[in-house]
Image (tube, rainbow, N blue to C red; front, side, top):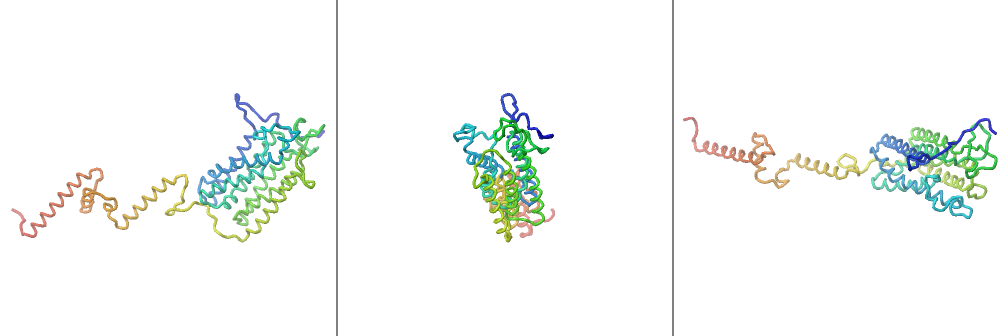
Length: 364
């Protein structure tokens, strides 16, 4: 029996009336919120339009949740559909009970971001670099959900930080009460990785997806040895767990991408296509179209175009313009009255001109 250990929470679900409040779900939601906040701040610092990361999260989060659950169910199908399954098939849909594969979450989440980037006309590689440290921090927070669910633990240990696990949990061994807190190891690894990514990105001015590739390589490196600590059931290939092989493949792929992109120097677009010097905002296209039209009309007026002719103005409006040019002050609210005054003033000018020509005039 160890002299010291980390106790597990006595429960992971609380009820607000009949509504269950699950710690696992809260940790996932909190991780997403923090990741979006960090990503948004980094995106603005990169020169991007505020609100972009929030909009992209609308694409990434649902895609990521579906991808994460699919990967978990496919790779651990025996837990739901095998002859000795400990869950019923319908429980494959119960995301709140735990079980999200990070590989599927990142893969489908990236697909969602790609759709969002295409709609805004911005570079997905720039978004990936900005989001990489934010994703690592979000993962660290989400791992707290494994703590409340008493899952993602490793082999037995008598170390002072051994994690107490209830004996009825899947993966436990008879007579053993403390295990390596694999979730805690990954949490700390993710936070350290996030700091390294921020430092490396600034130190070496990494662009074109290289920060994201560094994230993939760094995460898979840590995940390989953490996965090796686990003793719960999993598929094995040549003595290694499936997730370890996935880590190896992704680690090599990330390093290859990192190396091949070392000479890329092209500009990465972080704002949408500009209009008249202002970045377009897909959320307010109609308003910006109005602004663009107003600017065009102003340019026509500056170029000397007659506003009355440009808009097909009637005679009254033209007279008001003439009246204003002769010293009067045009008032659009009383165009008709000023038209009469303009006409009278024009008549008086004609009479004076006629008298000057015929010699009539002077004092009586």
